[in-house]
Length: 173
Image (cartoon, rainbow, N blue to C red):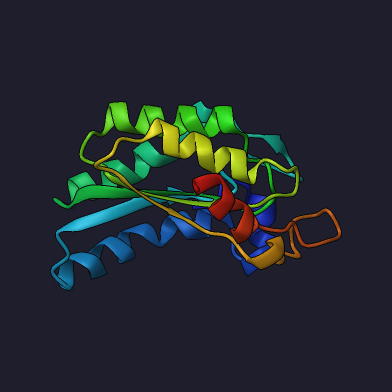
């Protein structure tokens, strides 16, 4: 689910409420196919070029709602992903979000981070994610060669760029 209704309307011509309204159908389809585990996630996690900053408390409320729906369906949540199409990621927030998730839901051990680099914070935010997690956890990160790419619907008049894969590899080494 996208935290920013303006962004999702520009990006997919759907509202945030349309996204949330599809959740029961998604859950029913997962159950019908025999799923035993589920994932939750938010996009535009950290902030929006249209409406500003999103607090970690707001992020957690979106994740809690999703987690409750999967719990009510009898499916164990083991995965969480955060997305950042507009480049508002920040290492302090990444660390706090992942730390709070780990504390609240210890069964979650699979994490994803889609971090754009519009403000130069994607690599350090990835490092913060690594530091917040435990050795038993998995972190999926995304990058692009040279940091090329991004979403044209972010309201800044240009693509926001991704974490450069070569910089991520250098940091990991």
